[in-house]
Image (cartoon, rainbow, N blue to C red; front, side, top):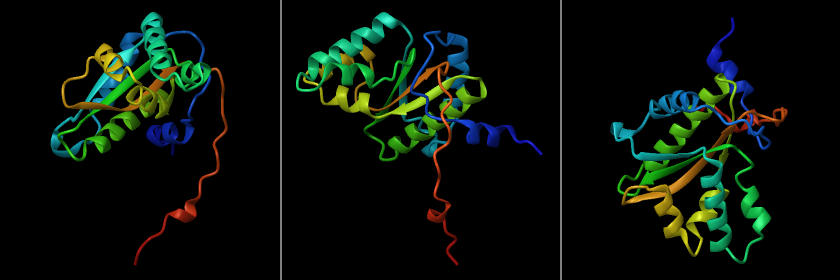
Length: 179
């Protein structure tokens, strides 16, 4: 018996090379609808998401990251988004202890929904570090427009895969029943 959810989980890979074709906004809204339907503590929905699908706006953010991190290599900063044509920036509510978990669950649902729709994805921490540590982080975060008391904690890139990576081995021995 085939199970669509299990098939999506087993087929999903982190995509690091994308075609330039943008993901349609209605497709991204389907992905986001699945994301916001993730389990979350006390139904606080303690996240905010900003979607960048405009190449000029993406370039502006990357330029600001480069300007704000002068000690780092510009190519490394520009490459940290892996060329995904759509980038989601996820912020957590600093007033709720479990918000980071909620954001992770949101991102997981988004990536599985994307897989089921033929859209590749990659979960990224590097842009978060480069934005939060930038000398001009306030300017970048202002551009994203998160509410007060929210902190950028995760980025997920989306696009149509230009690669088909194989699954890396997983260690089932790290899973044990406790009797």
